[in-house]
Amino acid sequence: MTNKFALALHGGAGPRAGKDYSVTEAHMEELTREGEALLKSGETALDVVEIMVANLESSGLYVAGKGSAPNVMGKVELDAAIMEGHTQAAGSVSAIQDVISPIGVAKAVLQNSPCVMITAQGANQFADEHGFEKIGDPENYYVLPIGVSQEDTEQTDMMHGTVGAVALDIHGNLAAATSTGGVFGKPAGRVGDTPIIGAGTWADQDIAISCTGTGEYFVRAGGALTAANGYKLAGDTLDEALWRMLDEVERLGGNGGLIAVSKSGEIAMAFNSDGMKRAAVSNSTALVSTTFAPCR
Ligand code: ASP
Image 1 (cartoon, rainbow, N blue to C red):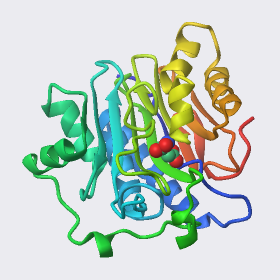
Image 2: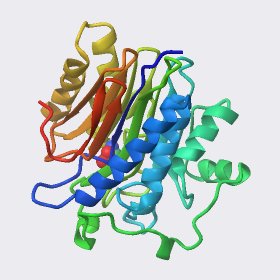
Image 3: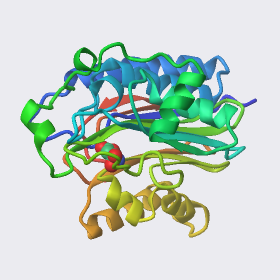
């Protein structure tokens, strides 16, 4: 056991300049404090990232869980993934419907299934079989998150939002979790980067990463695993590794951001959109919660 811990959260890279995100900043600050206390008390990184993401999902403040918008068919389809670093065990669900916590279902896939990824009807069935709580009435459950208007939800230019968490626990283990309502105006069955292990979500024994942004571009840029390999194999600093992949996303025409923690407890965050809701704390850095402060 060490006294080292690190935690970073993001609430998506969709914020637009000029809007007020003080409510989400306060929420993320409080949640990060809770996560810090959990990590200090010896909770595992895997449990903490799930707890953080489940809370972000159920808050209705972000484009994930309760804050998700319907696809063009009027159905809310959700994607989520979780990965534990030292075991590289992973679980993910895509295009799942009507569950309160997609990240909880993804964790159940990690723990109780030989599969890594379960999609659509199969994911709904898996959630039912494992007793996951369903939303009662979709018409009255989902809400528009802060900064998102009804017109926004009808546009089709890939406006987006997501939540994610990465952590290092005092046992020296890492984990990452990401959950999303995807992009607004998405077609039925569209799956972004979030639930693809190595694209939107990755953790191994050296690094944990959660991405947010126009998922198609993150997939095409190689996503989280490309950033991880930059750090592990190419000798990039944590910051350089994140920016190298993100610059590729931008070159391809996308935008977004990502957060990472390393085994040594370093935290890095990068975004090339207007802003990225994010918060972080570690045993050696004070808590920050911000949306627009630049990180390059
Ligand atoms: N990456 C997510 C997706 O493409 C959206 C987001 O992160 O905002 O589904």
